[in-house]
Length: 90
Image (cartoon, rainbow, N blue to C red; front, top):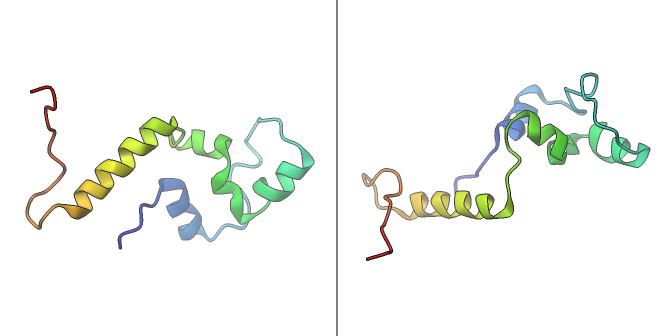
C-alpha cells in the first residue's frame, strides 16, 4: 500500500525535526498547552498554521476528492496512468 504523504510530513521525516522548524517565524497566537502539544513536539505537522505554510490546508470536500483520485489511481490497471475524467451528465 502506497502512503499518501504531504510535503510537510516528508519534510519532518527528512529533517528528523522534534519541533516546528517555523516556530521562530510563526506569528500565530497559541496557548501554552497548544505550544507544548503541537509546536514543541513532533506533532507540529498537525498544526493548521504549519499546513498553511505548505498550501496543505483544504476543505473536507477537497480532501475527499483528493483521496478519491488517489484511490482511483491505485486501483487503475498498469499502464492506464492517471485517473480519467468521466462526464456523468450523459
